[in-house]
Image (tube, rainbow, N blue to C red; front, side, top):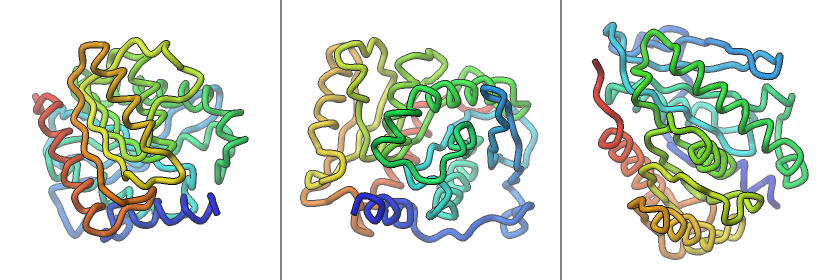
Length: 250
């Protein structure tokens, strides 16, 4: 049942865009490049979507769900393309490459979450050195497992200027040890049976205790897989939030 829910979540989010070709011939203002960086001696794939016009732009690391690349990658690419259309560089990080993971259940998450955190931090290094990125303006978007990773990495690394997270929260191991929360958008269904809405409430509470002002939107009656109207709203809110909270290109 968990596998089914997570696959549906990956398929449903961002819905409509097909995978981009090597060159985005349908939109010449955007480029797509497959790049790599090393983390723990492993090669990590990054699908980079960027404005075609030369310059240094804000960057957003995009982190997929625990379904990995099994489903919904075209949808995450669609969101990445939308970020590029708004003048940001989207870095879709295949963080499962570090552990050779295809799908992560609870046991796998418990085993590898710290390795994935380090892999995402190495992704921040990659972003900061990228010729198209303004290294002083980097955010993270995550869904489900990707959202938990976004929150935990942002707490460890001050280079993260903004987080937009859907159906995530704070990893249990962090407990009361979270010490940093950048501007954060929290989106969650009130009837989520995979990641209870209490995780959203906890993240909001901790963020406010640390002096942050999180933006929170709950979807009444929605589960881990949001309905099409709620998904459309989550996409729009995430794009607008990241646009507001990351510095424009230079």
